[in-house]
Image (cartoon, rainbow, N blue to C red; front, side, top):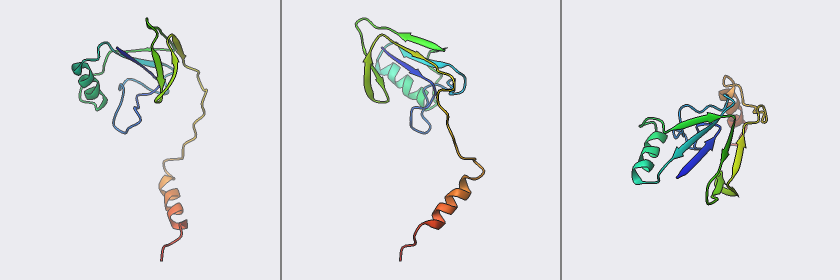
Length: 120
């Protein structure tokens, strides 16, 4: 069994998503559970990730407590951080993200390219 708790659908690779229903702006965590780790369920998860299958079973909540008997390791961004039980909670407005104006990105890229030294 595997459980995924996320605040977005991104798997870190363009085009791969955990679920189409997840949104970073909805104030909810998303939970996906693979109840068995058979070839069939892993293929379904892979097909789901590239948009070729229906979403896997999916739940949403503001706070999620995950327990396992016996305790299991918790992985976050590739690092083992803790053992179960663990509680994940949404903290509204905890991170401020500043992004460039889409209308000026091309202009900024051209300015950077123009400022680069020319090779002789």
